[in-house]
Amino acid sequence: MASELKIQVNERIFTVAAAPDTPLLYVLSDELQLQGPRFGCGLAQCGSCSVLVNGVETRSCATPVSAVVGKSVTTLEGLPAWYAKQKKLAHAPALHPVQQALIDEQAVQCGYCFNGMIIKASELLSKTPQPTEAQIRSAMNGHLCRCGAYPRIVKAIERAAEVMRGPSLSHNEAPGKTAGKTKVAEVTR
Ligand code: FES
Ligand code: FES
Image (cartoon, rainbow, N blue to C red):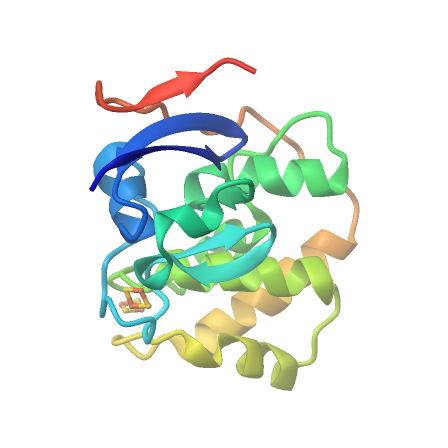
């Protein structure tokens, strides 16, 4: 049975009508029209649906929406702003450094796994600014890439770590997404 739940996603608060055990992924994609998290296995095995919940990588396919009430959810769409907040930057960059590094290393093939890879790498670098290759491989272990782009993904994370430790990036406007369905109401804070 549907209930009204208030959830915070990408620094905005939404009221959604959903059964409490609805997977968070369905609410994000179907109700809030956020296409960053992707459906892969639906079994918490591949990582393609990952989001940050209070800064921790979380499989949204296996997380009931009621579990994130009172917490802060960040999807790929909100990641540059999340990064800017963490680094106390005046403006969010267009891309998180991990996203830019994946482009620079030409790591993207089909790109299906990249939502989860980016979310997990962002979590890793927020806690471990200078990870070893072994630490990167260990952190990324639960994220599957059917194209086998792992070596370039690791190189990109190393590059992003270097950028994040260095001087500030030039920042331009943050990407944003708005909810598009009438079922969803944004609550003014
Ligand atoms: S779709 Fe969630 S882990 Fe695979
Ligand atoms: S780039 Fe295709 S699944 Fe990873």
